[in-house]
Image 1: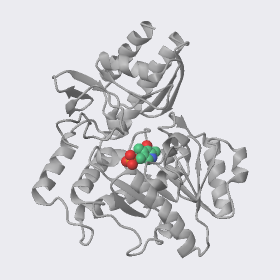
Image 2: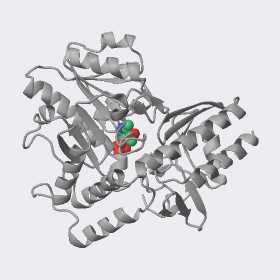
Image 3: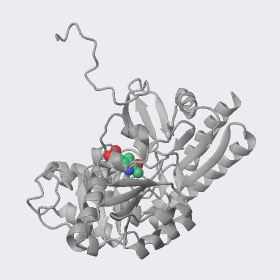
Image 4: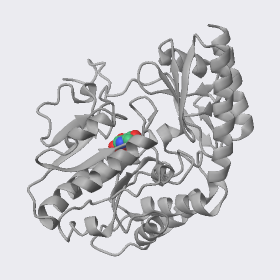
Amino acid sequence: MSSETTTINPLMATYNRFPLTLVKGKGSHVWDDKGEQYLDFTSGIATCNLGHVPETVKNALQEQLNNLWHISNLYHIPSQEALAKKLTDVSCFDQVFFCNSGAEANEGAIKLARRYAQKVKKTDAYEVVTFTQSFHGRTLGTLSATGQPKIQDGFYPLLNGFRYLPYNDVDALKDLKGDKTCAVLLELVQGEGGVIPADADWIQALKQTCEDEGLLFMVDEIQTGVGRTGTLFAYEQYGIEPDVMTLAKGLGNGIPIGAVLAKAEVAQAFGPGSHGSTFGGNPMATTSGVTVLKEMTETDVLAHSQIISELLFAGLNELKDKYPDQFLDVRGRGLLVGVQTACPAIDIVNKARDKKLLVLVAGANVLRILPPLTATAEDVQTFLSIMEEILNEG
Ligand SMILES: *Cc1c(COP(=O)(O)O)cnc(C)c1O
């Protein structure tokens, strides 16, 4: 086909894009190609947790840009070693594998669970139990792990070895262990599935069942991790120690990176040659990660985000009380916030964009609000008054 006669978009149509082209960002704000400023309460889908273009990360990346971009995992990489050291210092895990995205991190966790069962425990178990309404990624393995048929539509047959149980259902735990089960994988707040926090009682029961039955407890903290829920990792709020955790979104503040963290007993299942990635943990990505974690642990940004979260929840609950026919429920943890709406949530997203505010949806009737952890009280006020305007207009 000649290019003159076709009007086909050279980009595959996998995304429904908003009619907006953003070209610059700083802190809580972004600017479009016409110079219009927007308040960004999406953070690149829970990724730019320190806001756009934070100075410290920018400076570290600029220095790395002058030195070395990529070298492969055939050699030692100082920033990768530093990030692994930092991650294991601030979590309950002992060892880290680096990759480039969330889906890849979950692929790594699923492979690790199978290999631990087969090589270390010397069983033939391979099944990973996940939960309905979950989201674990778009690769064949992770879409098979995802408990949402719409993500799997048209991609059959799925990868073998997954079973889904209802989320937050203590009674269903009697079916947790099947013949070949080796692990569970879950989000502690379901993000894409509608901003649904796990009940503390259910997590306790699930963890206990895993211990009793010898199953690995693996948490997908790709969206909840790196400060998003008010603590560095969401598992800290449940008083448990998982065996495996996956990270991605917030870890590089926008520079692509993913990570699988595991206890030493489990991590030993990955020996040389068992798993790998060309780009995984490369100097640019891990320089970003090291600087992000330093900011998270050595400044007051987490404490600040908790104050901002309280302001945001208080304001949204006030709006819910004032407009009970439109805002049906306000939920979430930290700055991973969902509002159940009576109308399609996308209608509110579109009206907000006209008023220079960016927010997201999580399913048809859930508005998803993801400010950067560095958002100010004034940003929250601006957000709340735009929301009230929209609710007033009905
Ligand atoms: C975004 C997300 C993923 C997938 O991450 P990608 O980087 O898009 O592959 C997996 N799990 C959860 C919980 C997520 O929020």
